[in-house]
Image 1 (cartoon, rainbow, N blue to C red):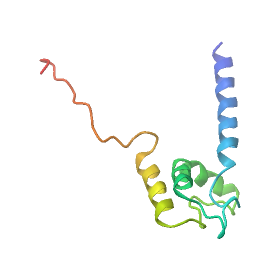
Image 2: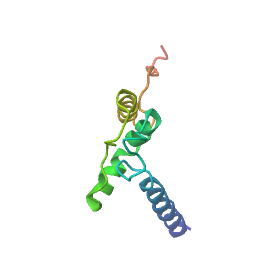
Image 3: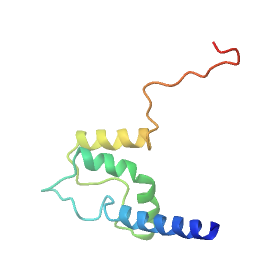
Image 4: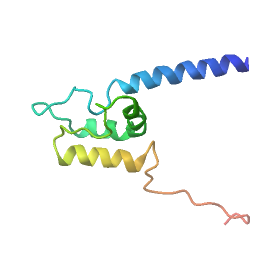
Length: 101
């Protein structure tokens, strides 16, 4: 049973990596005529760690799209980088002390 879970996890990870590598910055989908926008910036920020690893094996891939529309792409990219996967919390839960106060 444990071996089956490990195999399933590996298959899911490979599929996820293939899916994520299909839309990395520098893959040729954006150009001067059709630059990347805000949502592309958010996506590229989220997948930046995967893009960095992928760029080791393919010199045409980067972690930042060169053909972008400026401020809005940068804003989306920066928001995704600093937030991580839900790490940007505007409020934090308070820890309860041992006496319940």
